[in-house]
Each structure stands twice: as structure tokens, then as C-alpha cells.
Length: 169
Image (cartoon, rainbow, N blue to C red; front, side, top):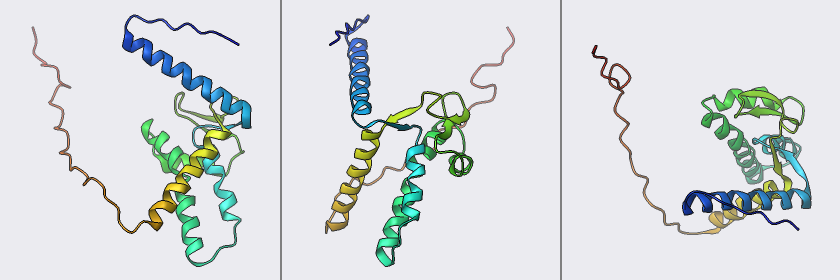
């Protein structure tokens, strides 16, 4: 049993720190329950090979292809968020060792477990189960109500001088 005291300068900061500690605690418990897998979307990418091994036909094959493509999205999004082309990262990672991946924080490729980039197996498993549950719900639903996507105007181009006046004083 451990007691962690959380202190901060403001109430908002304290709540943020407390939420992070609680998230870490839940992740640690989940890892202790079912173990860990390489993080950064690598485990999802590696699970594509299990789908490739299935002998499916017709609609089942179409569904498997959709799931297979969806399993690339976590690593693709992480790469895109880091300013790197996701398809290039996927190509470099796909045929390598099971723990090999892209660390977006350090912008390096390597063994994700050795770099400390890990996910609890339980979290990955339940994410896939929940996604499958929602997908099956959508497939059996006759009508769906959603908000119409808003069209956002592109941001105006940056003025010359990078936003600085450029005047000489």
C-alpha cells in the first residue's frame, strides 16, 4: 500500500496531476494483470499478420481487410502527429523484429520495449474489443444520427517576416 500526496500551485494543476497519477496507476495494474506489448501502435501493426493468416471469403474477407487497415491507424496517427509521414513509418516498421517501432518522442527507430514505449496488453485488447463492438452495433443499426461535419476555413497565410514587423529601429 502506498500513499501519494499530490500538490500544486492551483486547483486545476492539482486535478491534472491527480488524473495523470490515476491513469498511471490504472495502466500499471492493467500491465500487472495481462502483461505488456510494444507501444506506439506497434502491437496493433503486428496483429495484422494474424488477420493475414485467416482463410476467409466474401463479406468476411472484406471485413478482415477493413480491420487490417484500421490496425495501421494508431502508428500512422502517432507518426503524423510527430510531423512524419505515417506510411513511411509503417513501411520501415512492418517487416522488422516484433518489438521494432518508431519512438515519436525521440524521433528514432528501435526496440520499443527497451526504449520504454509500452502499452498494457489489457488496454490494447479491450480497445480492439470495444471497437469491434461498436462496429457490429453500427452494422446492425438501420438508422444513424450524427452531426454534419463543419467546413473550416483554412488558416490565413503567415505574413512576411514570420509575424515580426521586420522594421529596423
